[in-house]
Image (cartoon, rainbow, N blue to C red):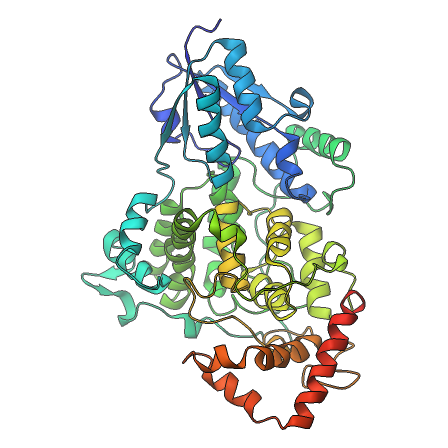
Length: 513
């Protein structure tokens, strides 16, 4: 039997010594339980890099807990077999006589439900503590959302700015505007991005190399490669990654955050989202460093505001919406999309340069930036009518920063319009012309973004016009998409017939695109 009757469960995305469950339980009052479960890597077909990042960060954090004086019951992949995280926690509790569990709120609805069921089945006292890693609690968000018929991130973001005082000059936003998004949409010059200061990179240590061996052993057929793994796996490394970004890359981030270029996997982006989502970095400390860089003149207001909005605005908003709308969000399919995810999503073997590059770098690094995710991969998935749940599973599987509370609302709500505009004002759709404007992907591509029919028609352009044709009534009724609907209305019947035939051919040959 244990010297204490209480266990503190630390999940793989709660790796913070200020975890509220740890702060509530000093080392002498509770033991720590951490579980590596193969099940969590097979719920979806998880990228090897994502598995390795979670496991390495967990093992490093377990060492930090031991150094802080905690007794840690750590069950590795080889210990747990086919058992789930929750089932393994139950087993550890029985083995050591724990009668109560403290845990910070999980990041997945499914896990929270499973823990509640475990407590009921095993007669355990379960205490779910509010996760102070976030800047807006679930209850606070619910109260805010109840005041709106349609939730919009912009209004939430302004409230968060006012409440926190971030980027405020008294009662007014710095620079006289809340949002500088219009200044943050530049494409690279025709000559390309030029020299880009690389992000911080970390050579795998002994713990990480051992994780690599176990990932290859347990998940040999999973997608991706570990050859390019240089992600931060400790708080010290995460802080270094943040500081490198702020000092060397932040100044160019804003203007070019939407820009894309062949064989440029990272651009000027921060690459710290995985560290924030694993709780190696607290969002407030990231925001404070970004604001400080603006206050001393290292970056302009547009770069600072654009970066901070993604954390203080979108990140917190996505979490709030997720917990407000689950489990329905997972089932939503407003547009009745029915097309299966093409097999080339797992290989990148497509003739479309934009998708070949975006998916290829995803498989190489477990990373793509937000425009590649939303306006290339997500845009195609929406236009092609791919089944939302299959697309959601893919996004959850392949990105190092994917935790369901942030991945699902971004994909279901933002990329796929699967919830019918619950918190977005329009479907985010674009033709090949947008991709040509924001990248060099169209150079040398088999397809011509200017053509919607014909042998060289770009699938994005064909499917974009097909989407307008199919959903003309819905788009006409929305002030933000009315102009799109007017464009499709200009086509005569012969043009529409030719378009519909090309759309049908595109769907028929989707695996060969």
